[in-house]
Image (cartoon, rainbow, N blue to C red; front, side, top):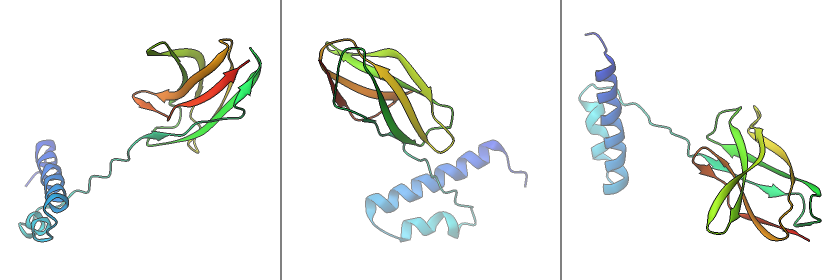
Length: 137
């Protein structure tokens, strides 16, 4: 029997449905069903993407350089890590970005000019870090 892309997808779907039924029902018997029929169970291991971000300081003078460092999981090396600032009710991407290195970390130099408490985050695609604050005085 030739293994086609459609057949592989069907087997993957059966594996995912079987794993979901184990989690939802809490039974081991439903997980044995695909394997008992001779089908190969494909493990779905999609790593959830996440980003951490930590500023080197919590307060700076206007236009003073500081660094934001962190790590990312579930993202490819070279992914663009972009600094965003909350302005009013929306997030605005600032012209500060750096690629994710091969070890999954980044270090970004930042200068801010808007005085007061700045809500910031790092984003890459649809993944965002938790919000952190830097006060510009």
